[in-house]
Length: 250
Image 1: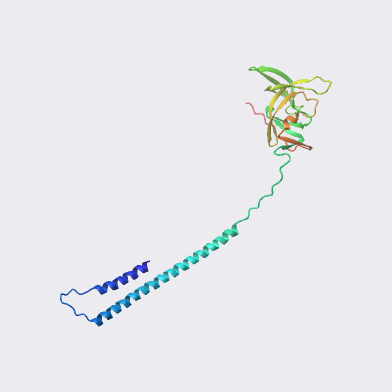
Image 2: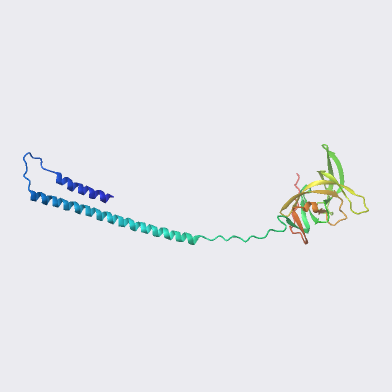
């Protein structure tokens, strides 16, 4: 563009030069041959100036074309690198849905932590029993604020250590019949929070003397319904939870 302006300025100067005349009062005789020669020279100068401008403009176009081609080549190289860098996404194979859904698995025997008594127990997982039961001794019913409560002892550290006394609100009572000839046993039921390995759940526990049984805690079908399945060929699948340490008193 700058070169074009220079060319136009040169042409303008040539034309303006021919228009300049001497400021005299006396008439100047016209020499036809000289005038024609002057005009021819001016025409030649103008044509040379225009040709020079055209050459400069052509050179500029050629330079711009070369730069555009170089840029296009760089863009093509970038596109090739981008395509090479693309990693195809492999769609993972869809596994068939688990037959047990999102339920967790329990062994025939598990270690279960009961929050209400701050202790863990070796627990029988029994699909043959309907309800769940915790070994409790010295069960005493009493009333508090118009509600039924129960006070009971639990051997939280085994029957070789002294039992600890706990109190809990009674949710309801159930009647459990052990044998066909025995009378039904009316038991208080408390609500408990359980932990089995990483799993937490809630259930109702009826309180009864299980001293004649091997396991102090039993979990029945009501607990397992909709949340767990039992693999009777395994035990302690979820390990053991450490009992809460008693706080020190000053």
